[in-house]
Image (cartoon, rainbow, N blue to C red):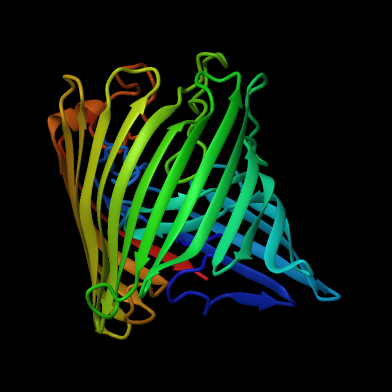
Length: 412
């Protein structure tokens, strides 16, 4: 998915307009028919960093998101009502976004003002299922697309609450994001910058801030190749991508005080290329990230290198191959972790393009990891007593996994 209205390369052809109501959405799902039955795979295989889950044949979840929007025109002023329910795995139906947006105002006709809960996804690296610029999804208000010279400016002020989940009593958080885009730097090149400032009360750490610079270059080195470079830093409860960092552990059985998670200092540099040349398309990423929680003495260092290639044998049949190698090391004496993964997926598609959806994939995934990765992911808690969410591998001393299944992915 890309953008709060599912705007992707090659997208929009399937968007439905029923009686003036626009319906867009995203869904993926399918069965995993062969795997080691004594291992958990529901979370997908990853060492835990943002850029380390290579998703093809490794999603670990199924779900659907449907966005329903209706726009009204009152004397040239347009206002939109937008609602997005979601359902993932065995969870309840939730509200991803629900907001009102007003545009076409006389003093700033290009700008759009909104209030409610809005998912403001900006730019992702699809193969690792991560939006590196993303300052939703919380209750608040803001504006987008305000013209300042040749640039576009957006801003939002959001709380730590969502429609489905409120912050624990006695704690609070607010986040200001300022987003400046369409900064022309060179032929075919544009820069986007985002500043994040977080204020908090009653939490284990205090506040936080973040800053991101993103440079997108079209026709990089050759026609049809796009390069995206991200340089990001954040602290406290400001996440690298512009969202909030986690305030509390999600598991139950602890008091509110013990349930809190400290803020952290993070830095990231990532570079991604996306290409399409005739029948051959794909995406690749190289990333390095450091993270140090406020309440520990060591720094985590994460690396990621991988890509997905697509080759179309005909209009409706492609072969997908994805491979990734990831590593996690520590500044103290903890053992370094490593995870390698490769997937082959014959795929039925709508066209030869890499971004063509729907896709129906028949995949086989092979992954292996070292003993340190197995140990880190084998128990219900890690060394600090915090439940580990990455329980996709490591159980029973295994250091490899083979998955086979069928998956669909569709956006419209």
